[in-house]
Amino acid sequence: MKLEDAHQIASWHYEAPYDFYDWDRDPEDLAELFNPQSWEESYYSVFNEENELVGFFVFKRDNQTVEVGLGLRPDLTGNGLGRAFLNAGLTFGQHHFSVGVWSLNVATFNTRAIHLYEHVGFTPLNTFMHHTNGGEFEFLSMVRPT
Image (spheres, one colour):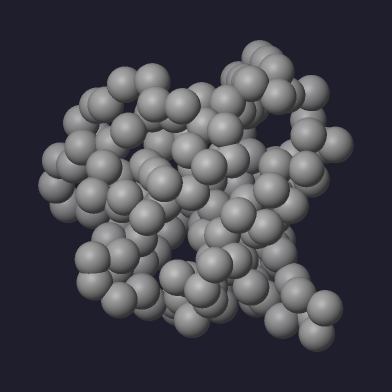
């Protein structure tokens, strides 16, 4: 990721209820997005064939488990692109990290994303409360072996 990518991603705004994922909702997340060390270690920009920024992936390694985070540009969400986007990111991640297990966390209200994650092989592990975006929200932890 580069600074210009981070600025563009930070400017994305999703329609409710997905505006929960807008970067300006959580100062800590926004600070991480703009941290150059994050770009070197975990954040990756995704471009289409026309060299347009279409999304990003975040990979955080903990031994053989790699936690994945992702975002698709708002105008591209809900158009059936999620499966191909996620599979491409996992393929990239598998080639760059020695992954034994993938993990991710998703807000429980986001049934659209949960459905996608289940379709690509993630299974629910547990729910937990997480302080973010100025409040406490329920999240679902999911895992998938490689």
